[in-house]
Image (spheres, helix red, strand yellow):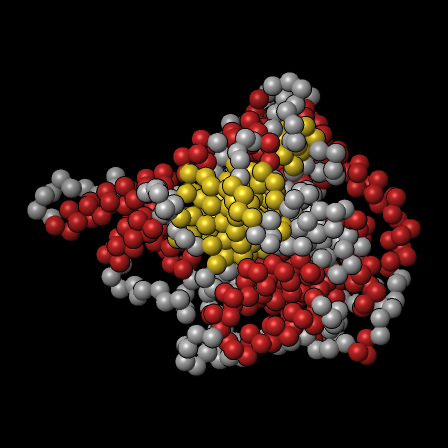
Length: 568
């Protein structure tokens, strides 16, 4: 009974689950193990639904039995409630002033937001270039009536993303931008250095009649933005609108993540709310529309590199078992989607291995089916052994929740994270709190038995390399890319792990890291990327990273290459 309820929770908490668990709880003694598990389950479900006070009462009930997971939940929720109230009390007067703020910019000079739909690729390219100069350099503002429809469209694009797997072929480039905090020049530099040539090459391809609002085309690379687009800097709106524009134009290549500053409370404290109110006034719907887009941004995703030899084997199998399927073209379908279809087909066929009966050797159909299932099983094994998984989030992986807040010893897998993550304006979900607020511990804890400690920030934890490695082994992750912390050189390999980067030289102070798959399997790595230059009056250099999974010249096995370069 309880195990069934836990499985339902992993598929997504709801009121019916809470009612069923509360009814079951009444049939057990308060001190029984069953009552403990049900109390935690109800508390988790209520917290995911933003019912914090009731969740805390159930956590306290479980904590009476000295349960580590219950005590962690109580501490984290108390910390959030206390600090939230403390923040609200401290800024209550400032918030009241903000709510009455009229616009201080003359909106008679505002322009209409550019319309990208219905244009040819060439016209769209030139319009995007003009828009980039206007918004990131010339501080152009846009009318409310033209901006609201665009924000609504972007919200729909973001909501469809989900926290999913993105399969990439060997050689596919990943370009990563960390926190920008309203720094338009760093966004512009990243676009010019990493993305401009890619967009230009694709837009000037001869593809016949390419007009139409539904026409999208894949770029040759994937562009990852790790969150914290606004606050602290004075041009948060410019940064977020330009990033939204390229996301809208290239939804399968531009991947956005939500940071802890994509949140109403943080925006009111650190400047983005005031920035919007100065431009549009406190009664404009622009601010709430932007908050709705923030709530639609995913908290994490996985990028999974596949070696070229494996891609070819997957394609041969897919074409044989799906003879009616047409090949993907780069004009109509995403390479990532095509790879995902092939992987899905392999996993489906591999699951049929035991169901295929080959006892009747005269039945050719059964023999062919058995052979296909067995080949799929081998390919599935190769997927697990040869692929390279990169986990991207803003703060850090939810090591503490995954390891200590399990129920009935059932660990929550990454595939289930999406089911219990609540995309809401406030970030109070237990998983979302870690994904947006966690930090790697900068040093070893005093005792080897200590694997984490509560963060001095509003939410989240600092976690040790040992706990991080345990999480990676459990979730089959090889590398984590995150932002959230200032890295004075822009890109930092966390946990002070001993690896000497190869100095490349050049105008952008480039560093390069090489990792074999076996190295990452044995010792997973963790990188922080911070892209806002001269942040809060520091002399730091914002940086970005380019990743590629390729075969080195003197080797036969593919390796992951991470090239880091500064933006200022």
